[in-house]
Length: 287
Image 1 (cartoon, rainbow, N blue to C red):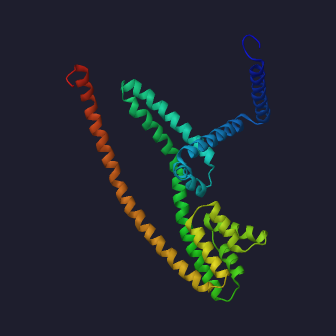
Image 2 (cartoon, one colour):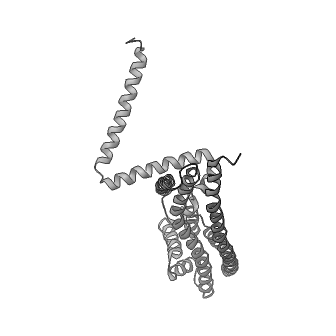
Image 3 (cartoon, rainbow, N blue to C red):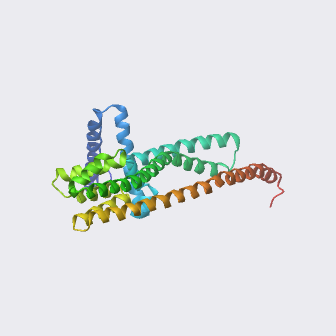
């Protein structure tokens, strides 16, 4: 025993300190060769990954996927850890701006509202481009799969084999969706696998219902179903789904036009009533 501390405890503490120092030195050596922006990005990504793990543990996998925008990020091709770090940075920045502005203009309990509101606005600003890109790619995938199946049906009617038709139809299109289909078919062919295996990997990598439906259609055609009828029926179904989605988007846009007016009215009422309530509170006329 040394100064009232057991020797075993002292050795354990020294071992733990040495281990921590070793990890710090190893991490510093690993990052020392990187430029400062790269090191900052690496630390930010590590922090975002840790925060994602904490959210998943606390909320569960299903709710965490919704909170972290996992599907939109996969469709947009963004890294989830980097996006979480960007969310956190924007939330902190706007929360500080809101706290500073509130302290100068409206001292008092108003900061309890403005600071969380500023953080939420920061998160929304970071999420907005990802949501918009994911929405555009969903719409593009619906249209591209419908066109791809229509091209496949026409080429099959000319007497070409199914495998050649799938590749020719993919080569005929342009854009992000057709590029994903070509990549899936090329990867499957390079591994000497059937085309539906590549489409299955595409559906697992980018969670879009259109990829799963395309894989099921190609699988049924490969297993002996009439390719022309399968492609034709699925193309008709996707065109009807796209028309229904367009009508729903138009209705949603009309409803969203009413929200800003209601929000402005609510803020205006709050702007008028808050000084009055503050004056009444300062004079002691309110209970």
